[in-house]
Image 1 (cartoon, rainbow, N blue to C red):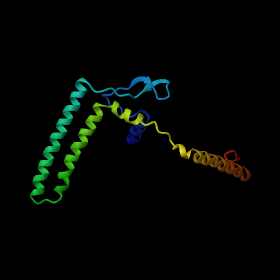
Image 2 (image 1 turned 180 degrees about the vertical axis):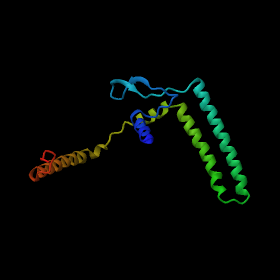
Image 3 (image 1 turned 90 degrees about the horizontal axis):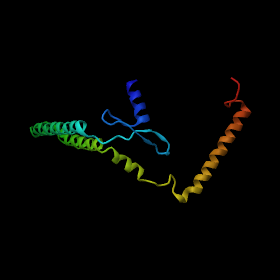
Image 4 (image 1 turned 120 degrees about the vertical axis):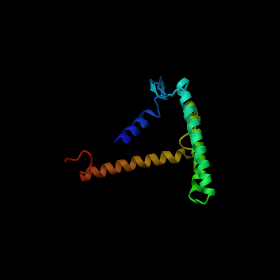
Length: 154
């Protein structure tokens, strides 16, 4: 239940942490509303993020060194961890960068103004949409004759 609530909140509001408060602004349709534009971390919050990164990278480095010693000593399973810990450190740096620069993600998403369908396929899309309307109308007429539609008595 908790996971479902968190997921619904994430889908509705986007990723907002306790350090990134939503700003009042204009949404994509141009109407006034509150949108989640996280602000860049500053002050104590940024210092905590940097400290967590340094601590996490130190832990990943120590774990790498420990697993490398075990792998060189003959433990075959440790070779997987030798490669896993540096990858985890790279992921930590990636997440740290995204937390410090939340506005960078939006420019990437908005940068693409490509149409949903390539222009040479517009006629095919229109024909497909017309066919779908015809099928829906035929299904509705069929349901009415059988009495199984939404307006059928129950």
